[in-house]
Length: 58
Image (cartoon, rainbow, N blue to C red; front, side, top):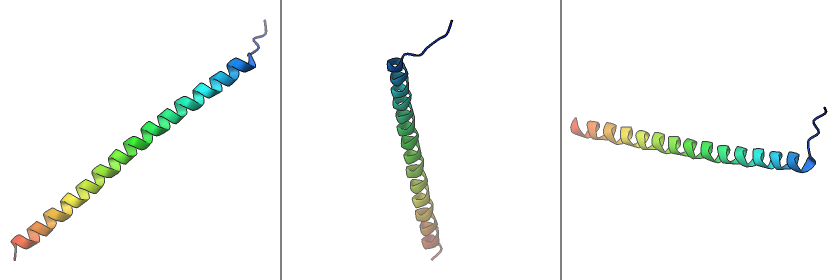
């Protein structure tokens, strides 16, 4: 028995795959933006802390 894929169902599978991929990409980008935000905040904190230490030695 040959299993022939209905073109309509095949196109629906492609559409679902594309939708899932878009959702995964959006989630990945959100995580990467969060990581970037955390890194920037940490860098700013370290800079301020270093500046305050320099002021305390004056």
